[in-house]
Amino acid sequence: QQPVQSPQAVILREGEDAVINCSSSKALYSVHWYRQKHGEAPVFLMILLKGGEQKGHEKISASFNEKKQQSSLYLTASQLSYSGTYFCGTAAYSGAGSYQLTFGKGTKLSVIP
Amino acid sequence: NAGVTQTPKFQVLKTGQSMTLQCAQDMNHEYMSWYRQDPGMGLRLIHYSVGAGITDQGEVPNGYNVSRSTTEDFPLRLLSAAPSQTSVYFCASSYSWDRVTITGELFFGEGSRLTVL
Image (cartoon, rainbow over all chains, first blue to last red; front, side):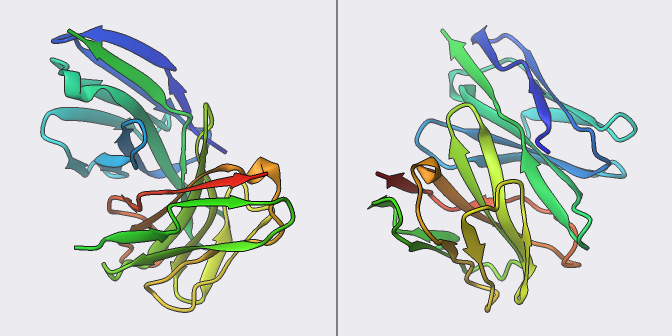
């Protein structure tokens, strides 16, 4: 089951901030965030692990509420290069002895001058 | 630094034909997976593997087969192509220290664009 992302799309002016939310109905082991530009493969931004460990991008931050199975990605002082589609991926137990990583439908972010 | 290599990059098939999308990684990653990407649908998991000899189904496995005989390779087979399988396919791999969890980033291949007529 795909996690749910919101908003579906957002338009920002350079320098503005944005928050992208992600929620799941399953108990999560980790949350991943990726950015994809048109015609390219997704690129890793951040991973948040159960228990509080975070790994990722210097200029982008995120939070993970383990009790609510929710995560938020915070983009501050946006730059033109931030434009793209952002995907959250959630790792949950598959019931077959391993975890599977499923992605939301994405949030299209457009930064304009 | 090859990373994750997918072939072919583009393919056109006729309905009913079969084919194999190849995926190879040189990072010694245990976890490998296949996703399909369609407009407005995000990335949907087809099949994944946590190590050689182990595969499991994802969200949309019907019409696809996989096998994992080596750590490096994870081919995706379309048994009898249908127009609904027209999509962009991504292979991705990640480190998994315990063959259960995914604690590192996913490295994606460049994608394979498949059209079924």
